[in-house]
Length: 460
Image 1 (cartoon, rainbow, N blue to C red):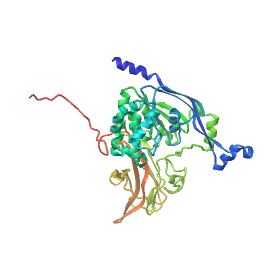
Image 2 (cartoon, helix red, strand yellow):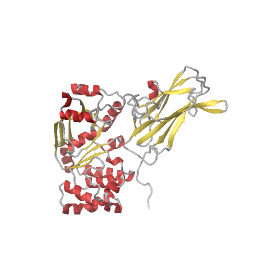
Image 3 (cartoon, rainbow, N blue to C red):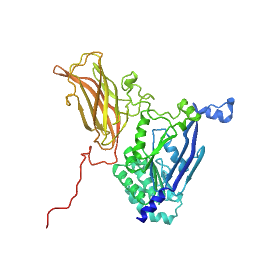
Image 4 (cartoon, rainbow, N blue to C red):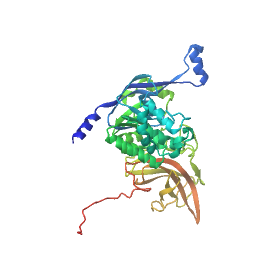
């Protein structure tokens, strides 16, 4: 009981204090504009200001495992680089209390010409350890990395998985008080990731501080005590993982309002200039904007989760003109909590008479294996005909029982014309859905088992 009391007190001690942190980059339309401005040619500024971070203030307490989430370009990696001293802020302050070990970008701190062991000593020395201290830690580092004889080869010959194994092994075995990780675990295989997260649990038990950035919302939900949500360089909120993941889902579909105290002149300029613009305006298909799904292959009009290169075909006698997913509150989303109810929506416009259209969806994993799916004929939900000019809204509502991870959603409208099977419109891998889970069982889906352990009723 006494040890537990000490841990609770330590949580209130800040390991990292950040106040009014700002990081501004100058952006130029052409490389030569940078040179012209530096030399004073033209007598005017030709750059635009991009606020990678705009007035961030936060505290991370000792013993916490903290996650930082947000869309691409929100400032997640920038804030970690400033904490670790890789970058200098434009203004604001950062105070760190404790030895930091950071795993930021693949390759950071490693000499590509050195072999694995030489890089272990190089990194250990940079972190302030003597050669004798590194000698003692070396067996544990090599055991955790588990890359065999490759440790004696130059790291430039390593695969990305081998590289991150060694880098992470060094980072966690030099007795850090604060561990900072930026997406690096997504490179290793599933067994190595499990080993790393087990190490996270050990670190938490020892009262270490962990800060990590990840797009894996399931890991954020499972391992974090607190989560910070960034968007376009602004701290939108902080709180419990579920609360912040829910807010992140609203950000992804453009339904999260900017806090009143963040409506600064700089922020308005930054937004107006389109710098760091989030590419998620609405969770809708390109078809909803008046073009067939799959056009706008690389523009900002394509929403997050929508495949800009979706494979589509069919006679188009009936056409899917809109598709999206909503959560249990009816909010459009790209992330669904495991065990919650969600709905798949599609809007179909009929251009010709279609006898008995069949509306369908299927879900496959990223490896291409079809996991599940159904259609309106199987469910006996719609047995009428479609007439020219009619528009039908179809909604498939169900409980999410899939394991945490990313899945691809395909949609279709088919039917029978006499004995002939017709494909009117089919969209393959149209949407990317992320399932957020803090409990993954074995296999593709969760059987929702109830476990009971009781004393045996028989005697020997």
